[in-house]
Length: 373
Image (cartoon, rainbow, N blue to C red; front, side):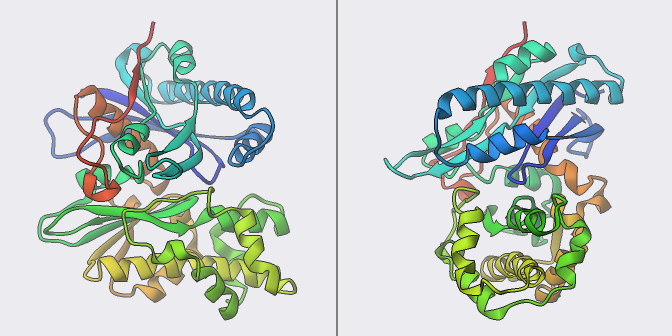
């Protein structure tokens, strides 16, 4: 059996925590094998607090510290469940890769370096699980002049790159991001714009449930061309890579400002237009930067959205779109697996970033180590 690492991911969608136990075979052509996967939803009060911490407010330091404690406890519960599902003990696991919850992402801003902030208490997580923890993956890349995101292209390269074949991986999480893996030449990748973050917000506001299952509500609406044009006029979409984004830009306030001239629009039509915004922004970026793409692998929660898949196919008929489920990794496991992979890279003394993706000055070992007792 190869070394075991746990990956934990809670993303921009703020729906919950994915945890995987990944085995990295020493003698195999497989990059990793998932031995167990667990998902736990956020309690409403923790979800609301993490969302609130994305913007300035009173007593932020105190609230952020307590939210980090609460998230570490939830992470610890997920780790316990993963170990039970896999039938292994804590001492069998080399380390946990804990992403934390991004509440601010401002690379290169303010002073030329900027910062990125992921809330979690890795020392508490090490105490709770008695497993070494690797956390704070993004900060070193930012310190080296990079965006600190996306970090998954290095993992996507290990998993999906094929010599002589132009491959892309599209993660449809809260934010949509692309990894471009050309048959020849450097790997690139960047955040395209909003995916589930705005779709979920609008659906919850008007329908109640936290997401539009299979995109059924959006599918019954009509795209509003004038609104779509106003949304696509956001300067971020025409900005060249390297680039990354999040709730710091694409939040409810961003949407409300653009809806001001469409106050009487049918909410279902707005949902359809937001789905079209995701498809259009992704397709525009792929056609601009990798028009010869032959395989487009979908992952993230949005990969299960049938309406969004149909919109992407309509705009990218040549791209050979497939789900990562076809290669044995379900779409909702990919990001957690990536942070198990990044923890393994840290333990091995290897770089976790790709400078052609983030714009950093060179390869860097990402993360900070919190040993167990």
